[in-house]
Image 1 (cartoon, one colour):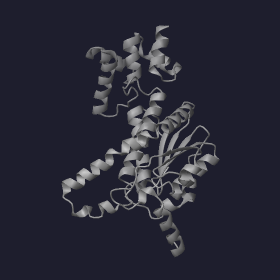
Image 2: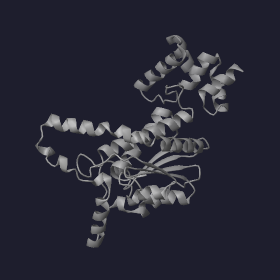
Image 3: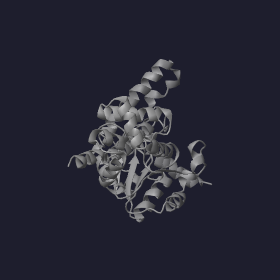
Image 4: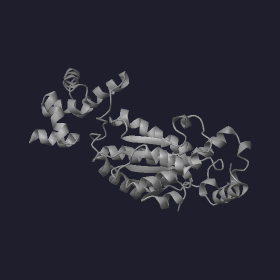
Length: 311
């Protein structure tokens, strides 16, 4: 149970955070017409992308460092609590179907475990020891990247995760929405997207959550581009696990090659449904096994495989 002194210290700490600031100009927002509230929220959200733009050089540096490590077999790990943790788990869970990443290559770790995705786990975010235990289970290596996600930049779980990861030699990144945060101090790379006070005081699922989602989108997507998971802006490593994705696979091969439907179907059959290999079959005029070999020799980069096929 938190002592009164500890509670006062926490309140004092929160009073210094931009994300927790009170907006007197919105003190009567509940008396406004619904459309006016919607306009206010929309205007607030419009500034989030501009705040993210101030961090683009830092985001790019994180992507390049992460991609280098992942190319050697490393993993991308997100660690956070509450909304921040859920956003990390969401981003990680979308990588396998979008980019064909193997299970465990992109991992979301949330304070309180999987149940915390839908039900708050009391006290979990306050425990750096819990973060250390969760990260220890992953047996981190220097080729891994761990991104601690916390709107406040002071959440003990996120800070504990980054400190543990750094001690194990992993690349560490802070993603926060306050400047000069404890999380940033703990990490090698700091991305601090200062979006200002929230429409609802302290509700960091709003602008801060949107900013974190935008940054996580960038980190995972651009890292996958660097790893050769795309061909131009086509998701050529998409995993066709349902009818929609199978249709998308055929469409991607069509867009990349301009081939007729029957040629696309034959290429996908020869390539066991793998989009990259099917594109090679069409554009390089090779069979399925040769396409697979060229891709393996090119580290999965389709452009490099096409060049090699033409040599």
